[in-house]
Length: 368
Image (cartoon, rainbow, N blue to C red):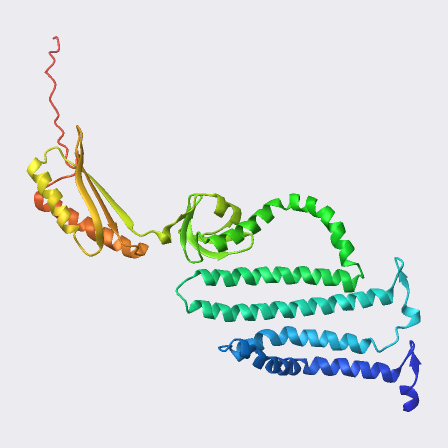
């Protein structure tokens, strides 16, 4: 039995292969439990910084990428104990198979580590988002989303540099120097993307609008659902979903309807010429009285014009910054009350009733 275990095959003993295989299978079976245990050990340190951290959320979010990272790390470390078979170490495009596998292993390890850090950032973002929900200001909510995406991009760039350094053995300093020359051309090609990135910082620090605000831009009106690094997502009043580049959100004339202090209602009436001045005067006074209500902050009612077809009554009123549904209810209520005043005074809209008279033509004598 021992002779079989000591038998050398492809420059390694059978015992070495079995040990490596056993370690890999063992970590594959227990990686879930190890990851959960490690996550529970890390949790007290996290809770020391953020008191109201949810342990279950932390473990469920971090355990899976942590388990994958531990599996990759231990597997690579175990495989490194084996001697790479000389017979398999062939050259592929002047690169040995051993070097290719080593490079591939480093790349997988770096990717798993960056993925783990991404999940940590997502967990921190969840904590900050819960804290932001406790405040009435929505600006801190959008800052959490923005910086979560920002740090993910930074980590991805760091991961790429680590792959270039430890995976392919490139000198980062020389690479960055060479990229500085190419960077100018890339910056010109990606000018629009860079402008949108800069515009996103302007949005977050100048704060012309926040997530949840109702805005009007480029003839579109809708609710801001997300502000990203490149664009802003808006749910329009037709329930469509549009994406507007951040540069256009900054450079265009943007109307933030949420920040308005009042809502304006308008009603224009063309009353018939049969209306008397006494009726018009009484009608205007009655409308002024009915607009004197808690829902209306100020109003204007006047005989704005007299034409050859009608008397023009212009009614303008302003409510507080209520929602669209509440404003529609107020507007409908006022319209019905104005209609009742018109019915009471016997006023009619111009052209509401038209009499048509048909005159008989003179009889024409037909010659016999």
